Amino acid sequence: MRVAVVAPGARGYYQRIVLETSSRNQLRILGALVCTFGLCISTSASGELLRSHVLMSISDGFVVLLWVLFISAWVAGVILAIVQFVRGRGVGDWFQMWRKSAVLGEVNIYPPVTPKMRREAILSTIILGASLCITIIAALLSGR
Image (tube, rainbow, N blue to C red; front, top):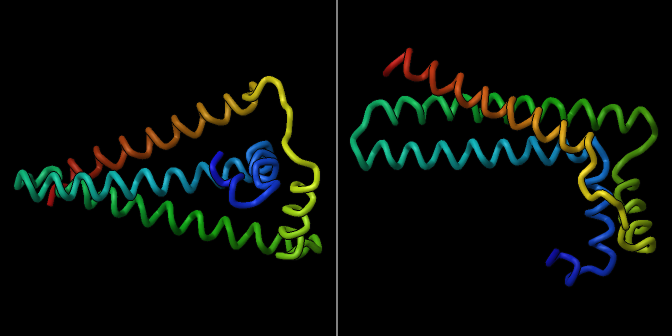
């Protein structure tokens, strides 16, 4: 991990983030947003380059999916922030957690990918793939 060069102890912090389920799922949502954004740009560029109305329609569908993902991630973030605030944890807790992780150092976990992580990864991949397929089918059926 190249970030560890910039800040000592960062490697342990990022390892602990990935080991926590809620942080792992937040990273997956971010990955889904980036993936959908890339698909939106690539299908739009391909549609314009090839003058394909089908690709342009699919690109419009990806824009709608991108907005749905963004709004749902934003609402989930607000809900998580409210829950953190009600529990008495705030932004200061993040700094304390980073400092504690820097002091503790790296995490030695074996196996690096647990069965729970594998199940979560498979489930999130299936959900993202299904939402992309549903978006493509809906875009093709609606036309322009």
